[in-house]
Length: 425
Image (cartoon, rainbow, N blue to C red):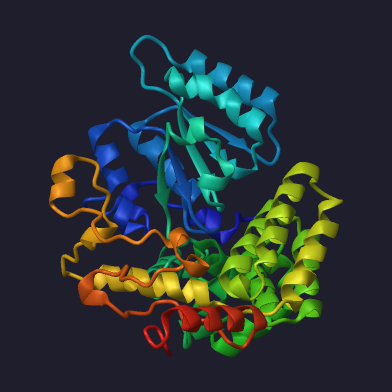
């Protein structure tokens, strides 16, 4: 039986690698490592199907290094130590340091990650990790500090097109077939920037067709509906389902939210990933309309870390329903985004008002630093009207209360009471 198309087309040199130009292009950092013949430990962070494993193998091939692999799903501390010992035996005299590739490194617990530290510190192995999760949350600080983190991006349509053309012209099996591509929209849309998914879809369509293969949007949709188990057997709809989950909570539909939560848990999704997304949602979509939402989401995040599955499903369900049925506001999210956007395009040097500066030396005091500052607690209602913005930005408003909920209606009244018309909408 032939290997899957994605495996048959896996590139073996950096020049054959499609995408990630910022890493492997002419001035890409990983290309420079290869050209210099020296590579540090690093972690590749990106969604499924963008070439993390392939890139690690290419680095090993190009540098002619011994290459050891571990999967965080199936390996424990014992397996890690055994592989490290094997790697040490491969390193003789001045031979190059072996590469140790760990797929899904975010699934390693602290003790497993601790078992890597010594080998990385002493140069027994050069670590290459791959993760779909933010390493800042899932990789311990001592290990993270010894690794560069490189972000891989989903493929754009131009890169998917290049991959598609390579598949039908280079692959030994497909180039023997009469393949006509009439439409691409559904093919690229279902792929979602995932190279492996694109090739899997092509494999499905070619395998289900006798004679000439005609790629149309309808053919792609029909083929995937008939082969959904094959298409999704590795959880490749991860990003689609989490998107539907978040949008259901944001849209205040607890039933849809629970449905997508159950799909993720039944499919083996990492509960900590879901909990982390709920924390983000509590700030982004509920925010000041119900500050308790963030407290509950944080408690959920801690609880899931402590107890794990299957009990964590109850905490996740409780939090999901609470957030879905809560009032919503993205005013804080919009405020910081608007302020950052303003800072990003503002080319004016706007000095901090003198009365807000600290006079830490006598010279600063003589220059007027801190002069005229009103200490709020010395005044009625702990408020003293004064200008806090740089003079040229006086009256600029970034935060606009969402008065569609009681909590921010109260905030709006408070701002108007204190500041009058200064920040009036």
